[in-house]
Image (tube, rainbow, N blue to C red; front, side):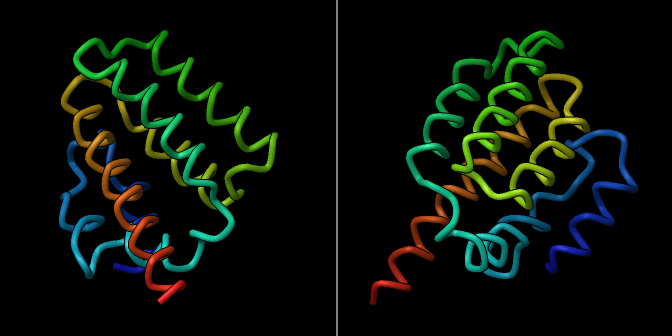
Length: 126
């Protein structure tokens, strides 16, 4: 799925859980294409740090936790350890995250991005 198609899905839905996981997971999913294009400008350490914060929240999602995640994301962008594209798309995904079901799908997205970041880094080095 192209970045543009994924953004259309984000625009058309109210909840992240309504976005089919197949749109971002798998070899044809958005996450692989996004990381293939952007992996060299996104630091794996920051992805992992952000993901650790996400895992801490899993099962206990609340509006205040969402604000903390948004703040951490903005901080990482301000430090230039993530790209503007990553910041914007993940911010939009978080905006569609309103309950634990949405958040579970958001966790899946982040796991997928980390996996494809690792793959893109390996493929570039091969």
